[in-house]
Length: 97
Image 1 (cartoon, rainbow, N blue to C red):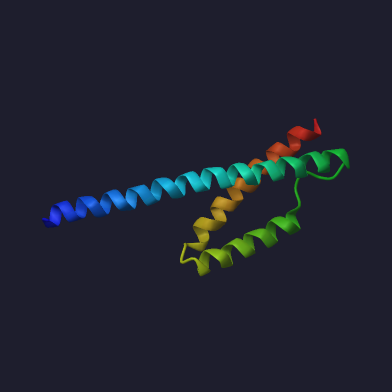
Image 2 (image 1 turned 135 degrees about the vertical axis):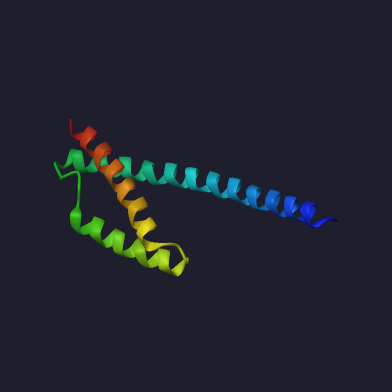
């Protein structure tokens, strides 16, 4: 087997793993948003604010530590969670109208 064919096989293996992990991410986000929809409905039913800054700060700190543990850039993880939180708050606001 040549170096090029070995590289092609490794590339194929890595891409298959990436595809599998992308599917896991999408399904995991889907499951997460199912729960946040329920939270939004509960907040709306009990006239609670759509955002919880204390919880959000705790979650960001927790995710930053998880990112460090996983050898992932904590700033990227923080931005990713901030994006998700913004989406969740928008969903919660929709439940309140």
